[in-house]
Image (cartoon, rainbow, N blue to C red; front, side, top):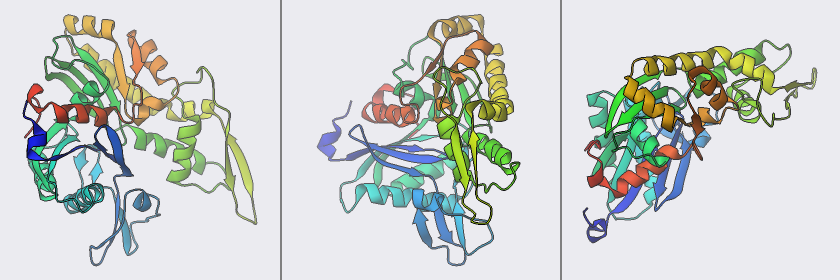
Length: 336
């Protein structure tokens, strides 16, 4: 392995997620922001970045427009993506003249053109050495699995825009499926539910809070959370309601069912040897969706296999990317 210190490169691991971008330096998270920017619709000038942009309302009609450059596992706005990545790396690197060595994780659904575009953006942002790693590999490495070993490992990564179900063996993805049912869909389900309650104001931000505090994949969960209170502060008609995890489990039932179906489809497409490995090693959950209470138990009941929720599932991918960053020569699947 090359001694990178001799070249005086600053090493950054970058997780370019649909919902969030995370950057790790020396095994520490140095940036964790929403993958969003607000731009002036007339001039194209960037107004806000990251969490500040994501927290602003946008009806799509005004002068100031919030853009999420990654959607459903693909780049939905190339110019906004370039602007977002360049600004995030500028924040991390500051005024340092030291060139960057970057490992960046990307969705498996990107086309070859999109992959080359991501490499180009990173290089124009100061990286002289760039490798890309697909999400399933990064997730598996991040939770300590041997991606180069012959045993089959199943990763279910429930992110913001997509859920990726992958089987990895001997440094290759041997089976894979991606569906557009994930964290954003869960939020929309909850938004639709709240909209049905008379006199309650509604927003995606409010639904996110419900998902965090009482989000559940099934009614029967250990250590059930206390109901979460939602309040409408309209002075003419104030109102407070309590939302329970049982209600949210019912609301999310159809979306969770689509993820179950995708997992079963992948399992049914594999060989008996792969199933034997997965029955022994289990199914591994990463991504924000892995935090839904009872999801591991529900998938276990559906598949009959052990299901493991990764420790710190939100950051498993960027941690795996950081490991890959220090071991470019060990992993032949890295894209350069």
